[in-house]
Length: 66
Image 1 (cartoon, rainbow, N blue to C red):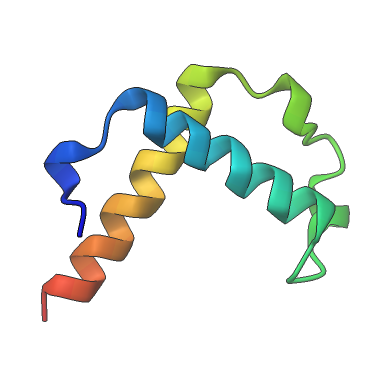
Image 2 (image 1 turned 180 degrees about the vertical axis):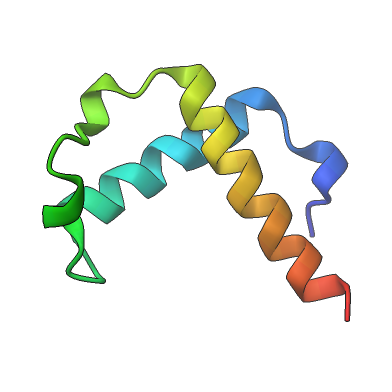
């Protein structure tokens, strides 16, 4: 199992880009209309990395910290 220390900026950006594409394309929560300006093609790697890292860090903290 990967650990947080193994999370590179590149991997975090890949995850962030994939998450944004999933949220806008699949729209699982039916909330995309609230973010009509969000175009996954305009999100740069720095922003995607920050989003990806934030989500993954929160998920791991929730999973391992009680």
